[in-house]
Amino acid sequence: MKLITAVVKPHRLDEIKEALQAFGVHGLTVTEASGYGRQRGHTEVYRGAEYTVDLVPKIRIEVLAEDDDAEQLIDVIVKAARTGKIGDGKVWSLPVESAVRVRTGERGPDAL
Amino acid sequence: MAPAITLAAEAPKLSAANTGFMLICSALVLIMTPGLAFFYGGMVRVKSTLNMLMMSFISMGIVTILWVLYGFSLAFGEHNSLIGWNSDWFGLSHIGLTELWPGYTIPVFVFMVFQMMFAIITPALISGALADRVKFSAWALFVALWVTIVYVPVAHWVWGADGWAYKLGVIDFAGGTAVHINAGAAALGVILVIGKRVGFKRDPMRPHSLPLVMLGAGLLWFGWFGFNAGSWLGNDDGVGALMFVNTQVATAAAMLAWLAYEKIRHGAFTTLGAASGAVAGLVAITPSGGAVSPLGAIAVGAVAGVACAAAVGLKFRFGYDDSLDVVGVHMVGGIIGSLLIGFFATGKGQSAATGVFYGDHTFTQLWKQCAGVGAVLAYSLVVSAVLAFLLDRTIGMRVSEDEEISGIDQAEHAESAYDFSGTGGGVIGSAAHATALAATQTKKVDA
Image 1 (cartoon, chains in turn yellow, cyan):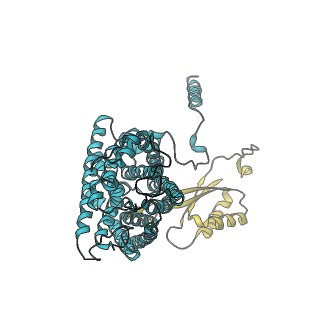
Image 2 (tube, chains in turn green, purple):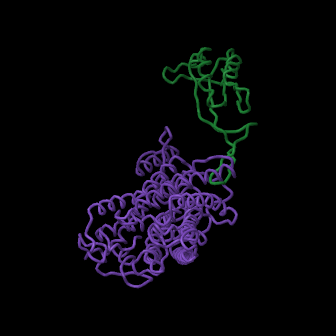
Image 3 (cartoon, chains in turn orange, cyan):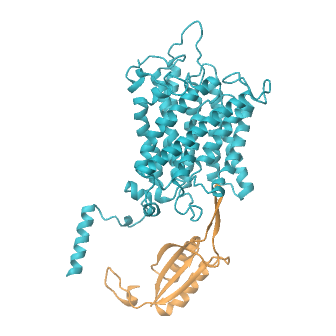
């Protein structure tokens, strides 16, 4: 199994969810995140005092996948997340040792 | 404050209309203090929101009681040109319910409560300069002492029938000197003594909720009609209505002026700029709105908007931590409004005195305004600084650095402003429960 993590622009969430559902993914976890890459931040002004805000709001999507599906699933996410502008984010995967469905106790790929 | 309208022939009678109007105006002035609390509360970081709200709220408690006990008597009793006293008013114990305020058509009680609301908001205004760092007990004591030795005498000078500034002919319709310069200069005096917030100029200190700031500014704008128009104490000659109109006009002009300045200087029309500009306009028209024409009010508002927008940057240049710009908005706005009377007074409003641009084109009124401004500014600055110094040396004005960094809300109020977390922010019930839980955890480790 693989854990696929995507840190992407918040407004792409709906497209990514729809694309993953169409691909047959039944569950995912979304967290609000903030960070920066090459995009860096923006400037805000309060009564003339200028602040550089370098942490940009992002969402982090986490999906568990079977080994054979992982690369294809990454492609699905990347395609749905891409706007072509700087700050689109990153997607990566890691090997997963074990997974359990809490309700039934099923283990391994059955738990996905 | 209106001159007595006593007709030689007959004494004024109680007017139900004016009395009702003044009671409503008193409630309007009161709501400015919670409005101010939100205006300030939204501007601080999350960790000191409640403290900022409470610094204003506590004034509604403390000053109300002091005003009833002795404040009103000291401020408005006839005694001498520097301070008032009327023993009948001590504790309001010998005031008849229908006894009229001398020369007016409203009861003494109504005038007293209207003025109480002014005494409440004035120390609350100072709190914005002291964000994040003042012990609440020290602040409460400061409010009580400051109202007693600064606000009360200054109100007497400016509005008391035998106050020296009133007799000199200084025009202050609703509190440009007694409220705004007074609070702004006090703020400057106190911050020069207690110093900066930890991380001033180094850490970003952006407002945590601009919607709260806008809500507060809206409440202030609304309540200010009572503050300003009510200060004529009645509606028999239309001057109160002129004040009402000018309040709206100057505020609009100042908001637009601040926004224009910001757009040119910093490239954006900010909501904080709109709220600040509106307040700057309200401050500047407070002393002047009964003396100027609506076109004059546009000028007063526009000058105040630009000047205050420029003045709020000075704290970074000179390194004094006027946290939420009480000096930059209230002191500067109050000075501008008070001095511009010397130029724009038409002689057709609250009095026949004219400014440089009207009548005989003399500087007479301008010099009187300078005297009022200078005296209030100097007195408030010095006495407030000394008061803060004495409090700091005795009970201490500031919370510890650790408490300031981790947040004054928790240190001084044992609360958090917001709980947005799905997990309840790790709240585990009562303190007793938490102790029990910790005990079981310890036991488990032992086993």
